[in-house]
Length: 310
Image 1 (tube, rainbow, N blue to C red):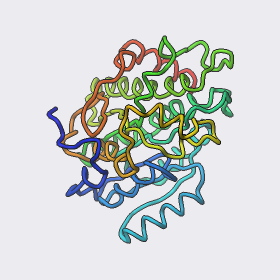
Image 2: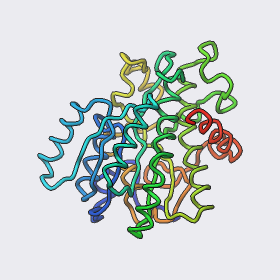
Image 3: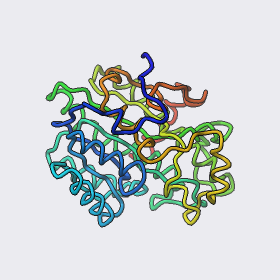
Image 4: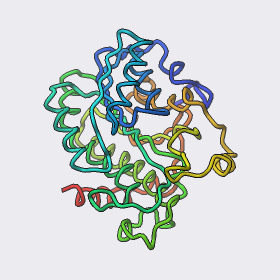
């Protein structure tokens, strides 16, 4: 793939200019703040019917209202989804499937960052549960609907995992399969990196399986860029802003409009047609870490995740 012509300073509106997304339906998780909100807004601006998967419906209604105020013709709906709870993920998927809506695009965007050690309702370390496992299960449950939509609409389906450059700061072995839920092995930033590495490996293995099946659905992952949003709120376990800014010093800090650009580009742009199992940054293909390209690690994570969700 040639360079896209876009860069770190491109905005989500710029990278989707002239693209008509009407007739497409997308689910975007984590849309009540930051790049998730901007992703939902720009997809809606391009005519996509956006389903926001959110923990707080009241907050989502505010987002929906703001989008409709700006874009009166927008098609935006909100459904409750707590990715840290497998029961909530199953309920969301079941309700969506019952709606009979098609599904062209799934954007696994929601995430938490550097929380103190906590176990989810399913007794899984919270960052791994929320950032990886909830999205893994959600994707799994919605895959048949996406296959049906791709087949009937003759339009390529796209699955997008929003990961982070932080995936390279995981534990030395990449994924600590046998110690994921052990507090004694836990380091909050390594655990965050591990969950973000899992997003890449999930997309890669899914892409391989979809290719093998000959299904017209792609799966990719992306780094949105260094953006200071509520995910880094020190009150919920993130770095204080000064420490964070020092850590991100080597990157250009993006604003929200730039931060959502790569997601919107990979979701809608014709340049990405047929490209699967890749990692994107700044609206161009980029290179993940060696762990992120490890085919065996991706297969191992897939099998490990399947056992947990069964």
